[in-house]
Image (cartoon, rainbow, N blue to C red):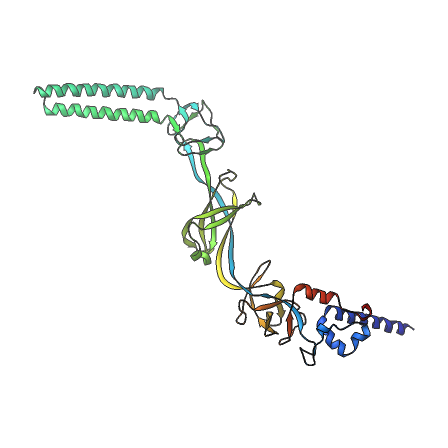
Length: 389
């Protein structure tokens, strides 16, 4: 009794496996029909699948397949690098003189324009020096004028006239020096930009070369990054780049290459490149890290559907329909994309019909019938049964 139950169980499993084979491998039906197994399972052989003797492989008839044409597409050569950002210009403002700050017009974080006086030092002594130099110049000019009048009467010599002219020139230089010393008591913004955090206030005493503030022009951000030496011949100044701040992952900006270095680093075999990106909304800051992406047009390859690629012991291949028969064509995969695979092959050309569905039962030289995707799906999912008629 135990052996009988096992035998019945084996027969049930075999019958179920045979039925699934018939349901999901339509190309097997002509062969099973000749063996009489379709009648045993109660499955009707559709007339469209019946084939004359000797057709197809093993008497199976033409296999229904879905095809797509191979297309030409340029391979994308894309590189990504991490770069450090810095401002277009950044100037550290220092004091050129020693003194007490009497007027401070800038504050941390504010924007200043070039030429704006941002601080003044005590300048009483320098103003006095300017007035004294002006008096000496006025006296020297009066003396020069008097000597010139006497010369017209022959009362003075050429030597005396030359001495007065030199005295005027010396007084002019003295006035220029006094005015320069007075100008050094004012600290002027050399560029337009944003002021960083300052640590000085009105009344502080500063020495020469003390740092007063840092002014940064961040209207554009410069990004230094490195590219491998294999793309040196493909990059050029003005070429567009995609820039993504690492702190703002959802933000992608358009920039361009500003400068290319002339020497390849021997240790890393990379070349230093400087890009720039506009900072119109002032979201970027100097010192931020950026991901920089560059795309280069590559060679033209054949594009096929990912489902069409099959594998054997010899490597990847595809089935191509030629003269109504399936032909096995070996390919070399160059790049995988989400919607396509770029390949190379000596036996595949643009416009060839490549099988994407129905590849499971194909053999080299087998007859095939290209159909639409819906027709093959219906043929697999809905086998005709005798008891349904």
